[in-house]
Image 1 (spheres, one colour):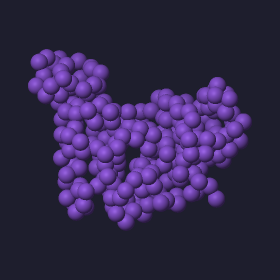
Image 2 (tube, helix red, strand yellow):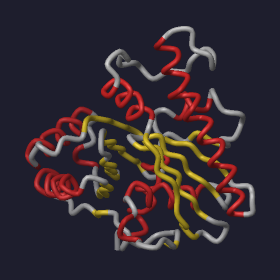
Image 3 (cartoon, rainbow, N blue to C red):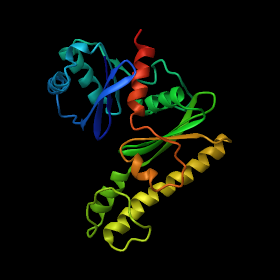
Length: 255
């Protein structure tokens, strides 16, 4: 079995693969204050609960939080006796990085671009609804040519509550109409429908620059909410795309 870990700014996702099948998935908050011992004990608890502890043969870590990458690698080595692979722009990839500065690209975006290259018809655009909403664009020749980074739905909601005295915190969900009849529905319209309209417009601009229609793949927790409010521009929702990419990249890089 293979352990894959995707460390995001807000949440960390853990996947357990048995060959090509994702058999277990866990999510918890990313916390830079926790030590490798704390994360190691957490891994022992998670894997022990699923009777998988003795079956893990390899591990790969992707992180956009530099401090936590080494913490997790140390935890995996100390508690599982496994030398984890760390994904970076220097790793062997099924895509060619064709950006101005490859060092800047987040490991999660590398995993997404690699996964879409392996699973879907190119050119392709991955839209990941995380803390930020990111677009990762792979052209028809498997070149990762760039993307878009925009504030995510939670960032927008929290900003409205934080910087305006009368606007409340809210749960992200689809509004019933574009015209809000009260404060909450007006906020949801601006955040969810406004985000959906931004995505639709940016897809058109990206496809114009590609001079081709692209395969559009959405991933991340809020992808179903956005899918419900868009005019059929998303071809696929693949919530585990990043974990799949990490699994494939482990086998590409394990030597």
